[in-house]
Structures are given as C-alpha cells and as structure tokens.
Length: 163
Image 1 (cartoon, rainbow, N blue to C red):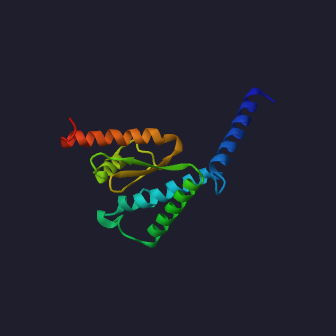
Image 2: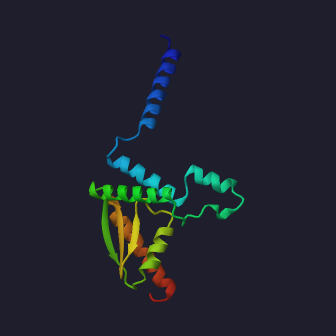
Image 3: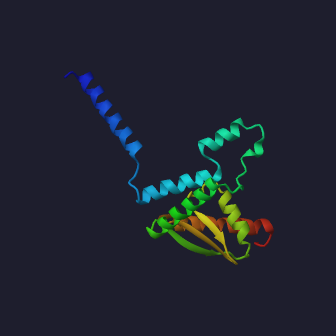
C-alpha cells in the first residue's frame, strides 16, 4: 500500500477506536460509573441539563424553572445522587472529614465554601454545632481542609474578630 493510504486507514481505525471508547463508558458498578451517575444526578438537581437549559432559554416567564419544586423526577434524581454518594463512600473513593470552626458560624463557612469556584464537584459540606463535615475524595482531604481554613480566616477578618 502507498503511504497516504496507510496513514488514512490508520487514522480511520484510531477514530473508530476513540468513538467506541467514548460511547461505551465505564462498566456498571465501578467507581467511575458511580462518579458519572453522581455528577449526572447533581446536574439534574441543579437544573443544568440540556432540557433545563432549553426550558430557561425559550421560557418567557423565568420562574418556570423552580429548583425548589419537588417533582417526581427531582425526587428520583435526589435518591440516585444519595445512592451513588453512599456507594462512593463504601468503595473508599470518598472520605468523611470533620473540621472544627473557631467562631461557630458553620453556616457562613459552608455557604462561602460552596460558592468558591475551585470547589471539587464531589465535596459536600454539612454543618453541626461547631463542625464543618465534608465528604471529599481521599487524595484531596488536605487541599479542601486548607481551603476551609482560609475561608474561615477570611470570614473572621471581615467580621473584625481576627486581629
């Protein structure tokens, strides 16, 4: 065969292999599969799916997309997200960590943490009396805890409680 024919045939084979890999996805029940399903459920709950974006785009009344509305689809997505979260914790991908807050203003720290742009999609925060409870991938515990500490210090500085 000639060189241009060989190159084009090899490019076609590579394209078919890439398309097959992209369309098949990870096997069901693996960590990667649970991560993909978790993120899909989160997108649905946040109203970021393609259908939700089309509804917002073509809607004259912007209040059509009420994310607080409990529809059967949203309840199903919430249950799927919680199920995938539990599976990721059970498989050892996510780990729970509790970070104590000096001031006790846990809600403000969690809210500021969730508004950060560099927040990992699997990080979930929950507050107790003086503890920020997070679930984070095992390799990122130190990074996320340092981020929470910086947010806490910034909030204390803004309130005038830190010199």
